[in-house]
Image (cartoon, rainbow, N blue to C red; front, side, top):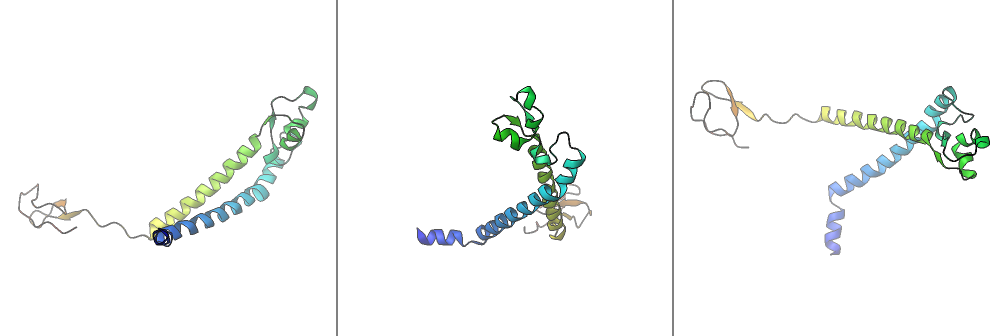
Length: 152
């Protein structure tokens, strides 16, 4: 059983997957830091709907008393005082992070697809009538001439 596990763990695909997960986690931290520390603070100041300038701390209090409602729009303050909130600022932050990561993955996949060779054609030309037929065909459907099928 130990030999079987060693064979499984040292296969190329498993190692490639592990490297991809590690690099993906590190990339996710970089993007999260960029969104939290660089992109969202200026947006939070420009769009500030409350006294809270950090967009991640924006919240809508659910059960706050009327006199504490304005203070409770800060998720941190509301949490300290046991007030339930809808943390829509954190949700907006996570959406921006997701969009950036998805766009980066799109760019990587696009480059990989551009560098990979195109798939071989599934058709060939009939030597008699010059129409396109399947590589596996043994007879042309247009001119009915017999043709030797190509090996796949």
